[in-house]
Image (cartoon, rainbow, N blue to C red):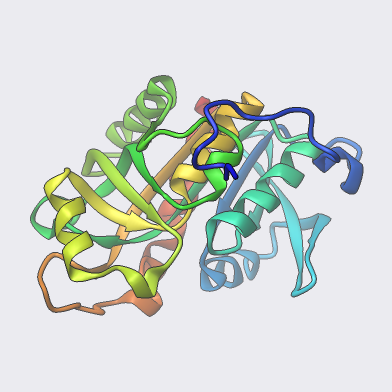
Amino acid sequence: MKTVFQRTEITEPALFNPSDTTKKPEGFPEICISAFSRKFFEKFIASGSAEIIAHLHSVNVDTPVYKINYKGKEIAFYQSMVGAPACVGYFEEIIAMGAKKFVLFGSCGVLDDKTVDGNIVIPVSAVRDEGTSYHYIAPAPEIEADPCAVQVLENVLKSFGCPYVKGKTWTTDAFYRETVPIVKERRQEGCLTVEMECASMLAVSKYRNIPFIQFLFGADNLSTDTWDKRDLETAGFSNTEKYMVLAFECGIAL
């Protein structure tokens, strides 16, 4: 018996596709931005400048998709679900709605605090320690980000004077199984951060041929054998406006 981890090719065709389950709203923006933090969206939507244009549906919750005008461009944005399968499911449906360029941002665990401290992280590759990406791209230990998308993000950060670092991230399915030996192993392999979606989102963007940017900012610290929670619950909340503007600028520049 072969699982997706042993197959050398991606099987086709799919029995059903996102377009079979998702209605395409008229005039859906080509640029879409997403983040994970509920507090981000509560703060941003409170400004009153956004309107609901669609909903993403799951058995747990209905997630509104908003539209805002930024520098004369209509941009869609919504709150992503945490974890690769749910995050990818929403991404697939947003593409089916009409999105053609996508920017995602959120917090991450820090594996190399000395390098990451005070910097936005640009993932240039991701270790595939999850399962979702293997349904889109043939098995391999890592997946690389599109160099053109990385350059766009780098240019935007430079133009705003934002300090950043480029490096490898570790995408895992099981945050309670970030064991001390594996954390050390990933750090030795050059991983700066750990999160739960990047490898899968890169795989979908390659499969669907959608320009995709993701940037990360540090929350909890896993640089030593003792976990430091730090500002995990509120990570990045004070920088809501800055991160949203950076995402909007990246979307326009893609």
